[in-house]
Amino acid sequence: MIKKCAICNKGELSGKAIARKGQYKAKGGTGSKIARWTMRRFLPNLQKMTLIIDGKRARVYVCAKCIKKGNLRKA
Image 1 (tube, rainbow, N blue to C red):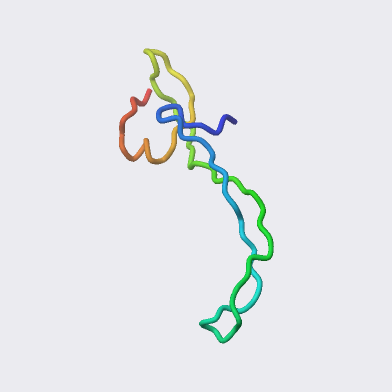
Image 2 (image 1 turned 30 degrees about the horizontal axis):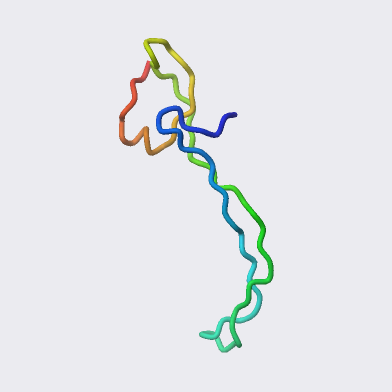
């Protein structure tokens, strides 16, 4: 599956998943430290739809934001 929206080209983003260690100062501890982090992926909310693109029917993936906006032509 291509993880891109056919209309706005929204794709996946990368970020960090942070694991923390220690008790927070507000709860009586000496403070929270970052123990380790790993890279993770943020995927868009893609839905499979049948649209009319360039006068032809095509089954493509469209993000939920474009569906809400309504800037597409359903087949």
